[in-house]
Length: 172
Image (cartoon, rainbow, N blue to C red; front, side):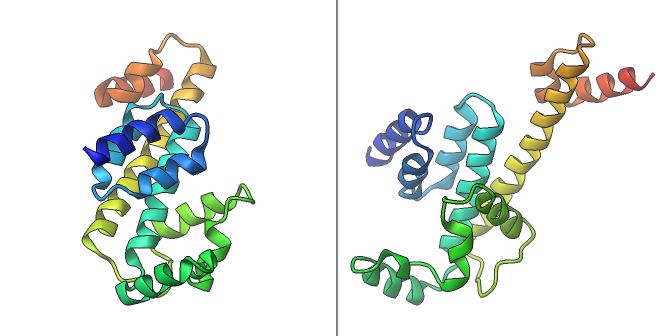
């Protein structure tokens, strides 16, 4: 029940406030619920990048050593900057627009230092990769629309066979 309330709140808040929406989603134990939420939102580059950023953050949080994390959470009441180790600072804060993209790239490439994978972080990495792939498909669809050649963009983005046939047809 509690998590369905969190999901409903996040769904209504995400279009207005990405930061608060992501914070609400961080409270979920099951990241597949977040995946379903992101897939239900209107498909846009912002939605797909937000999903990728959420899963990258989830990986960072999950892969911190548990003892380290407990100490940081307890210390965070006095100083919230103690929650993450120093090497995460440049990647987590939102005040520079290119930082979330850097974090997504670092996590996707497996270049985060001092991390121990967990079951949840492995699942989050897979979901991160799938949302990065969805971004690529979405950008292809936008390019296809700009050609104005009569290809159905919605079907192109969802039907693999139609996509392959359309690309072959455009090449001829």
